[in-house]
Amino acid sequence: MNHLCLPLLFVLLASATAQQRTSHPQESFGIGFGNTDPLGFVGGIGAESRTQFLVPRQELPAAPAQLIGIEVVALLAGTLNYQSLGITCAAADRTQLDPVFATNLGAQPTVVLPPIPRSFTFVDQVWTTIPFAQPYLHDGHSDLVIDVRKIVSPFGSSVLVGHRIGSAPERADRPRAAVTAGDFGSGSANAATAVSTSQRPLSIRLVWQQTPTLRHRSEVGATGNQFALGGQVELTVQGTPGHFFVLLAGLGWAPGQPLPGVLGELRLDAGYTFRVGMLGATSLGSHLVAIPNQPSLIGLFVTYQAATIDPATASITLTNGTDHFLNP
Image (cartoon, rainbow, N blue to C red; front, side):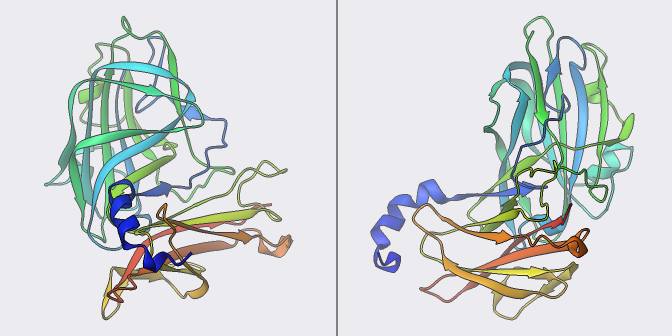
C-alpha cells in the first residue's frame, strides 16, 4: 500500500496521532522497584509530599513543543483520591537539583495542573496518563523541572499505590529527585526545601503535542539487566503518518547544533544514519537494534536521535535524543 496516496486517511487519523511521547530513561517498565512519591501512598505513611524531577535537555524535543501530560506505571496498583494534586513545570539549566525548590523552578514556572482534589486509577503494566490543564511550552533547548505536590487523605484511601523507577542496572549518571515527604497534616506538600536530593526518580513518559519524538526500550535479560549483551533495543519514532524518518546513532552528546533549513538541533557528538523508513497509519515507525554478545562492548555509551521528513514540503524536523549504556 502506498501511504503517500492516502491523504484522506491521514486527515481522519490526525486527531488520534497528534500526541507523541518521550520516555525517561526508557519505555520498558520491567523493574520490580518503585516509589510512593510523588504520586503514591502506603497506608497512612507519606500521605503528603513535594517532589521535583529533572529531565535532561537531550531527552526533550529539539524544537519548541507543547508538553500536555505525564505518564507513570504502577508497581502497586489502585485508585487514589487526592485531597490536592498539583504539578508545575519550568525550564532549567542544571545537571542536578538544588535542595531549595524555588531555585529549581526559576522565575517563570508554569502551573500545568492546579492543586485541587483529583482522583486517578493506576494499573500495573499500563501507562497511566495525567493530563495537564495548562500546556507547558518547551523552548527546544532547556532542561525541564517537574514539581509535584500531593496530599492524600488517609481517611479516604487505604490502598497501597507506588510507581516504577529507574533501570537495571541503576544509572548513576542520571539526575536524582528532590523530595520532602511526611504524614497527613505534616505540611510536606508545601515544603520550601528538600529533605533528600538523592531519591531515584520515577520512570516516566512525557506527552507532547504535534512534534516528532523518539523513544526506546530494552527488556530485562537473563542476567537481570536491560540493554544487555546479546539482547536488543527497540527504537520507536512517532510523528505524522506518511512522513519519512531517519535514525541516527552516536557515542555521546554535543551542544545542540542548528542546521540550515532544519527545524530543531542536532545533538549527537558524531552520528551515522542506520535506518530510513516511513511512519505508518498509526504514526509509528520502529527498528530493532541487536546488541552483539561481545564483552569488550560493556560500558559503551550509545546515543540516538531521529529526523522526520514531510514528503509534501521536504521540511525536516529533528527529534529528541535517547541514550543507554551496554551492560553484561
